[in-house]
Length: 456
Image 1 (spheres, rainbow, N blue to C red):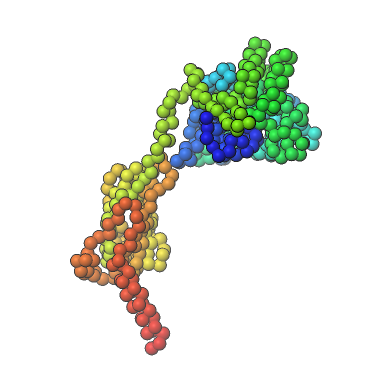
Image 2: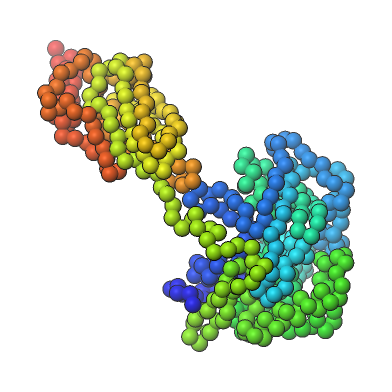
């Protein structure tokens, strides 16, 4: 069972439902996305869709093969793209299919139907268009403007052509990815229920039409989906988007039958592809039970994502530098870090202006670097400052160290109590007592000189 503060604040449908964090926590363990964002770096990485990207820059265009096609909402069929069509990027996706929770195999029809749905419901042909949702359509309309065409290569590989560019190929793949989180027959049944005005995909659509916000976890809504699946099965219905495929009648019959049986056995219509499945929902006690999806087709074993269990954040353990330097003197600094790939430092003068910044590659342990005499000449006399960041390539959050130090015009011999260097440890910013009286003396001296010149 899953323990969260609230388990039901909105509808459970993958189109415009699952909007609250509580339901998404559960949805996240029962569904696998095609791609995902690295939790510590934000970079896109493949989950169920490995990719190869072909692109150059925003100005260079790629021609599409003759086989490339796109869904045409006006003609209600797949049509070849224009011979003159050009794309900015091509992404070849090699999908890692397995079984849906109802036992049916995920296949290329699920991918094609998901693209059909996005284009069909992202296009409003006129004010009487029934494949329109007040929330989903405007959102989908933005993404479909960049989809130029697709070219299925085999049973689990598709080329996607998009008018989109990014310097990070992972971002291009994330933009172009096609994937489905539910079987095409469930999506088709949901679509027909909305077209017939029995439910709505979105909250605002439900309010304006005075119908229920479609939720596949609710027994009543699941029963509506089952009725459509039964009708599809009895009439040997084939969705418009899949009519060109050469699947036999048994294929569609098996799909409908498996989803009907799932709803009858589980009293809900939430069918997905993740490592866990939604076993039951009890509205009376407001409890959800999930179970492990122990299916041989599932591609990931326990421990596959263990690298995300414990992040190794970069840390500055120690910093060693002089407390006081003479202007024009070389300044040596040693930093001890762990889990860091590089350090970035900023050197500012007594006026707060940055006079030097540099990124240095590091290895585990001590890293020594020097600030040249030419650079320290630009500091000016008085208190200057250095900020140092320890950076990791696998975690976005850096560690941070900051220290002030004194710059003098002439070399000053300090008593033994002042002669030691700045030592920093345990990730704290430390300003030692010695610097305060010196700064005070310099400030008072500057004030007296200024007053003398203004009152001769």
